[in-house]
Length: 240
Image (cartoon, rainbow, N blue to C red; front, side):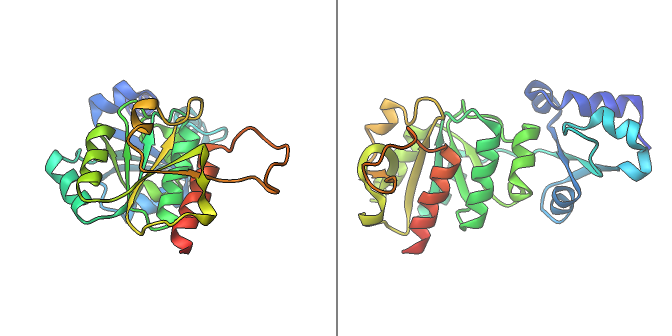
């Protein structure tokens, strides 16, 4: 049911260069594989542990223990500049990721976007590859529904600005998000885990938001994890 060449191919897809060369990526677990099979993505093959055996599955899995199922999937085609302009012209509420490197955070943010009905995420070119197995796993299937677009964030921000939509970002010196007027459309930028939003991008933000601790002024953690901050921010936008 699975050849040595299949095993070699699947194992190689843990590396981005081979995902790029082959145009393939891997998804593991019954829920995620089922999501893939019911999506518009092309599933090349599905391997199940009860068919190929635990030993074979243990040789291809990226998880700590062999998964019940694993799918080999074609990566979707990249959107063109005209596709991006068309998306922005609909005046969506969108997320933008500025140099996020942690696969778990990016996968969780994709899952959050799916939950809060934010169906497009723009990302800087140095953001972690969404087809990284750890990202795919953390999305829990949301990767098959969310438009995720690598792009020049400066250009995307300019396009939102040209349509008079606000550019939001989270900062420690921003205005309290709970008292701030929030629009139903616009771009919400989340910064990298270590450096936050870059200076170049920060200079283009129109509305600086702050998620305050409780009680205000209390001695507390230095900052929030970016995925947690994204959850709070998206929740507040959708609550209005």
